[in-house]
Structure formats: structure tokens, C-alpha cells
Length: 191
Image (tube, rainbow, N blue to C red; front, side, top):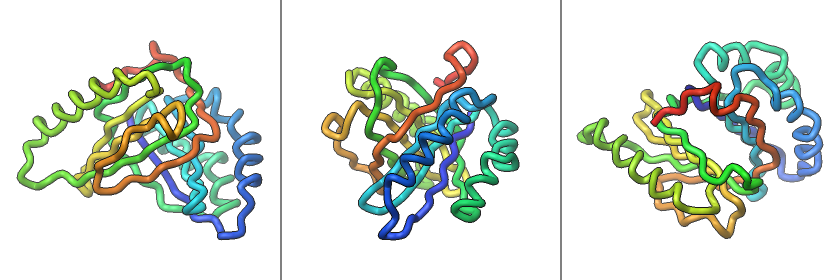
């Protein structure tokens, strides 16, 4: 699986209702999108960032999206933006009955001396511990092999229930909508 995100810096005076209307109109197009495992429509009000986060079944599906009419709609509205991508290492769900309203994206650099297999094993152990939290909807651990960074992306019931981050870099988001067209049986979650 491949995780992907782009961030669009909106003007300071941009009305958040325009983003909410866009999400309302476009979310239906993703609720049944072939090859899409997960999409979070995200917004950071303080930074004025619209930053959807995707998980694709495979690289081919992600590539199709970047070349199809849906992404052309993003480009037409906001211009072509930089798209980051990560290899999904671990993806797990907590309580899927929750309606997540808060997301946290954390990034840490991996020390060049670090043994990667042991590092990823510790990430898996941390994820298993995190899954015990009843306020967690989902958590992803992914790898950027260009920058040698680890990404942790999690969805939470609300901001108050989200644990404090100790990462090198983190960005909080409000969750405007979640699309998950592929069911568990259709995907092989890395573990």
C-alpha cells in the first residue's frame, strides 16, 4: 500500500466554508473509488492548510489518480501541488464505530546508524500499544525511503482524546470526512 498527501496553503482570508462545501461535493466521488483504501479530508485552521491524506491499494492505483480527472480538478482549483508519498509499513484500525474528528500527522527522521528492521519492530510495538486506546480510529506507520523518515498518521475521536506528540514534526488537523471504499477483506493491511 502507498500513503500519499498534498497540502494546499490557502489565503489568510479564505472562507473555510468553501472547503467544507468542496468536501461535501467531492467526498461522494471517493466513497466508492476503485483502488482507494482510505482518504481523510483534512483541514488545519490555524495554518489554513487543506491537506487530504490517502492510502492506495498499490502504486498503480495512486498513479491512475494523479493522472485522472479527479486530480485534474484539484489542479484546476488550486494549481498543481507537491504530492508526498510513503510506503505503508503498518496499518491498523482501532474502534471503527467512531466518527473521527481529529487527525495527527507525525514525522521523525531515522538515524543513519539505526537498524531499520529493529526500528520498524519498535514502531509495530508502539502501534499495538496505541490500539488499546478506545479513542483511536486508525493508525498508519509509513516509510519515506528518499528522506529516511517515518510517518505516523492517526485518526482520533476528538482533539481532547489525542495523546501528546513527541515527534520531530507534527501537524494536527480537523477531519472533515473519511472515505473508505475498500473493505477489510479487499486489502492486506501490513503488519
